[in-house]
Length: 327
Image 1 (cartoon, one colour):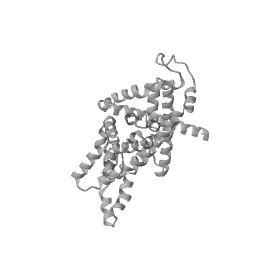
Image 2 (cartoon, rainbow, N blue to C red):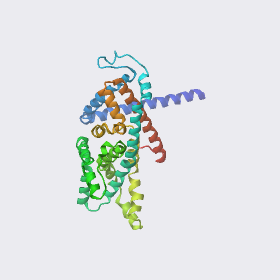
Image 3 (spheres, one colour):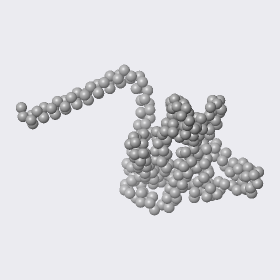
């Protein structure tokens, strides 16, 4: 038997073995599925929901390349190619909303990303369980209030006769401003109020991960003379590193997204130049003014940039994290 024939037979046997292995895996999958069909059926409503509300609407992205009106169907609307995207590039109001979105998002990234980590570590280190539960409840509570409620509170607190001015006057300052009418202060108002609302809720994943850290590590470090700060830095923080990286990826990929509910509640005619963000701009142009094609083009562009940010940050964090991805 020649070498070529022997090599061909070996290759044939490998292909046959690979095929039989694939058949065995498929058969095993169906067997396992049959044993668990009741459990598998429970996910069907979720799959149907995703198909109806997440995948079917993707077809509507063709509106970005058409000139659609409410009297047209998607199929009948005329194609305009890249015209909507060319309009975006020339729209100064859109670019102002981009600047506002990035400004607010960077402040939220700086404060809103770090504060939950610090808060989670502080809560974890509280030795008295009843007090720990009280702190957790108080920090979680704002998350469960809608922006309609919190927005009304902020409008009242930041008004001329509001709580903030009363506190400042009590401390001896001459304060009589309505801060929500000052456009230059809006970025900080939006960022700090959002951090206040979500910081406590953001600690849940960190606290859950900290609960899985072996206490023997802390005991060994304490025996070796490590201080509380050293134990936190060398045990707690490395223990939650994966969750920190995951939250960083999701936060950075969402830089172009912003809280629409918050914006619609806090924005007014005086602070609009600094308060208009991409989401509120799309809402105003798409629903209020009826330019659905332009709004779809803006949304598509934002989604593409967000996906690029997601992939880029994941690659960067993968290199930092010993070439391991958390996604």
